Amino acid sequence: MLGRPDHEGVSYRTRRPSLSIRLLIIINFLTLLLSLVVLGVGIWIAHRGYHCSSHIQWFIISIGIIMFVVSFIGLTGARRRILGLIWLYIALLTLIILLLIIFTTFAFLLKSHGFQDLLQVNALQSSPLTTTHDLTISTLLSAGDCNANSLLNFKHDWGTVSIVSLVILLLLLLVYVVACFAFVRAMNQGVFHHTF
Image (cartoon, rainbow, N blue to C red; front, side):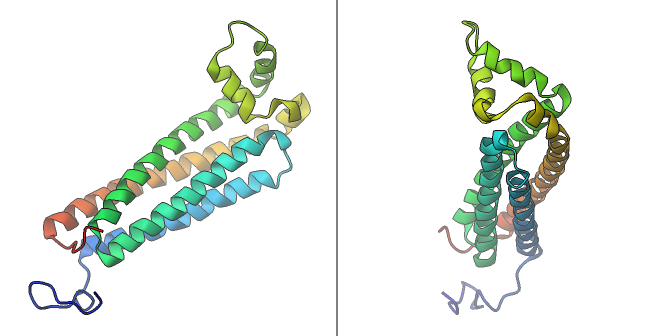
């Protein structure tokens, strides 16, 4: 495939990438860097020593790993001009954005409402009116490891996490819009040579 000529007799490797392909490559590289920031936030939470945030830190680290893999898929698809990989990239990036919206909302709820409300979740578990949402929050916070002092101590950290996740979400939304624009433009130019 390296030197195989296209229908115009020009090799795929010798033809200069279009502006849309270069834009996709840059966007995927930036998303790759953002994934490292997300991983860093997850690792930072892990090293803060709060046992009650262990499930949440793994959620953040998982999003970072998924972002890294998706960025790599998009980068490979753009460099090799493989249409199927770019479609996969767009679909997975949509999923990541949805997960970050959920997490950012959760982080701002923790920041704005404080942790005293969440401590009451343990009391709600014995109530017949307990909802699945209440149990999910309790599970995420590993209620057995959390006490009032530790929850109050990392309230400030969750303020930082919520701001960082909002900035990452906004940057990722910008990346998504630009990537979709570049993808549509590249498809209209017919620059993709392989389906998979």
